Image 1 (cartoon, rainbow, N blue to C red):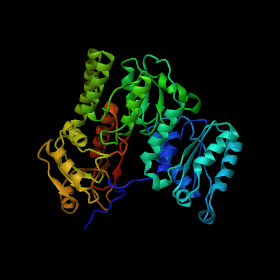
Image 2: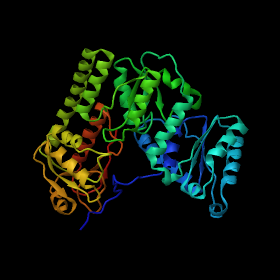
Image 3: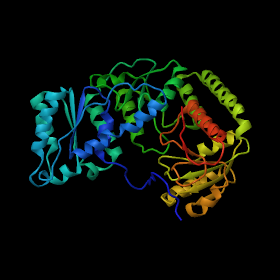
Image 4: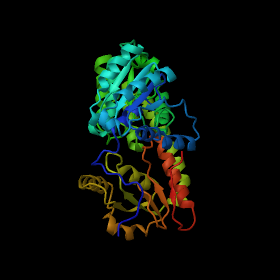
Length: 431
């Protein structure tokens, strides 16, 4: 019998359309207004994307900075699919300009608009002439033009090629590239903390968090740092290299402070760039001491406990080695790993190879793994499992960065093991 779970992800199909990517690329760029040439439901889907981000940041006790920019739908109707919807877009643009007074309009088109054949590019050009403000046409026709990342990266390109200008670089200023829950998310906070040890500060996180009035100032940065994971598409790296070629913004490279070993490598890369190798090694020793102190307090509870890992998330989003190393750090026994049936054969093969390099850890398919996991003290899972008495810890979707991320994961696991009984339930990592 298949395991009953929530939110299974597959890596062989897109998870969203281009319009949501366009929206996310400018969602907090004050001065912009986004128009979806679409039915109203499309705008609703995009506007709810920030709910999870909002709740997580609130749970972490961090204030959110700024509200998202206005998102307006042209509200295409059934009859517009027959007679054309360009007049709806024309009226929507006029309403947006009159009501929101934008400095820049961004128009994304839906599948419906693409099938109809509405000329969104021409309407955007006419609107720019009429209202005297920049109008960016991201006419990718929803799912017809690709997926989320296509809309996201192409919107980045449109902004960079049109609005970025050569500027004198400001020493010590860093540009963060990527999202990862924004400037108040754990990833960006931790990167900024580590950068501060070298006297570096962050003015901008692009795209999505730079006001329109400051787009031309982004190139004042002297260094760009990627926020992401090793499994992400090459898109952000390509754009970092373009910024290096065109504007001379040095690029730290596609290295990420994920897991302790990854964090030490990232710090060493940064120290080499700053020509401060000794300072980098001193920082690593200091961070190691923090982890060792916390682990020593947890060992009376964690040592010898059995943990089972359940994976239903493709390698684009998750690599198991970091989780296993965290268990070993707490002197826990990785009792086994189970693959959910939604994983591709390629992902399972790569995960097996990665797991085997860390020890003799049993690996199961979904059917055979159900009985084996019941012998564990705790289950670490990418997908909540129903009707299980096991204490479950959800492996975060957004990767936890740096020392703070590792400490949060270890602490959450320790607290879960401190719970008495086998009443099941899901626990989430708390910063």
